[in-house]
Image (spheres, rainbow, N blue to C red):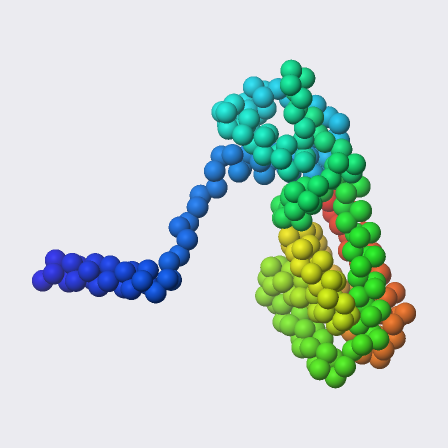
Length: 266
């Protein structure tokens, strides 16, 4: 009887799978990260964090493969991928060098940077990222204050409530809330490019906000961030454009100073 039941279940499952396939509901198979991908990720981190600086020559393939615990063919494939991304350049009979991505950046390199969700950034690169956000988000705050309507005010106050609830949840919940908060301001600006820019920075935001809120949770300073958010929303809702712009700068500068303290001065 048990054997019959097992066979019946298998047949029933197979029939269900066949139906899903016929209806075009196939699922992509799971993929395990390859050694090459892991190697690429490790070298990206070493370069973007500044362990290998611009112009540095990387160790020989033999030594680097030994350091990473991979075969030389795997390492070579990873280096070729990094060369295609614009992070390194390979010179025949001379070796592999970290490319000056400030002068020779490409769309492939920009995509690599924006997807960099783990590891630290070179301090100068980190400050450049903050400067870019300041340039964009001061403007989104100013425009949001000039265009905020009743519906948008309700959206902001709903988000602030989500922030209060996230404090008692987890670091990830705070990171998600923080991203939605900044995205909502970009949407309220009325400029369609600003939300797209912030969306492209989501990986970077996840990286930096994760470190920030882990520290804030430990230090018990999350309420300070939420206070900045409330002040910013109040300024936007009162149509105080200059004040909103100033509070956004204060908020981002606070994040920059905190990150420098917890990541770059230890």
